[in-house]
Image (cartoon, rainbow, N blue to C red; front, side, top):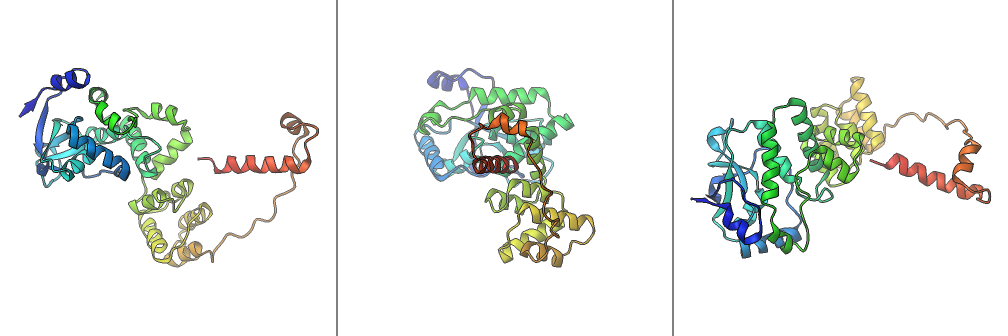
Length: 324
């Protein structure tokens, strides 16, 4: 049964749209095959559930029909946007959810809808692997040029049209970021090109290492370094870490990568690296280096003590080498 968005727009001040919304049985819906995004926090999920109980699902799902999917699914429709809304609706006893059925999508376009609609979430709320999935999707879409401009424009239009004012109130002012391309995300969160490149590398990692990264068991740059070893060796590393509670920092990751390049990476050598038994030979102390007097004058006053200057330089270098 088709609904018209005008009634919703009149009720909540949402702009008119041409999208046809239909009510679909929740039992007919299945998640997207490669959904990379985690649920929101428990507190936010509870607020969304209360909103659904009181107002229903005001922001319709986006789905595509089984007949147009290249692989088999155990339902009539695959969810592209609205996984959490579907799950929470089921939890509060709903049997149907409003949805927009999209037809004629390529696989790249379907994936773009999944990632674009998830950019609505706060960048800080997303895990490292989720950020990587978003940025990688944008990058690949640009590279392959397999996503039609009108599809991207429709996603933007959809998100603007169905921005949910009731959920915003229910979530105490938590508002979505809205759809944005890589450039907008980079500007909003001050991401450098190098940082974006790192996230794209992270997206190539196996799920086990992504989980270690998301759980902050390894650092971002360590994960990037590990992205250059083979899938088989990544799986071996995850197994060794999980079974032995080893830690892997960037120095160990670099050594593991170097061993692979030399054809010497085995379970024995990787174990030696992770356990700390195998370390690189010390290159010795760095040669003495004197800071140019002009640089000292530029940043310090004549009355500053040498010890205080050393402390400030040490902190500045620490910030420089630990930045993303």
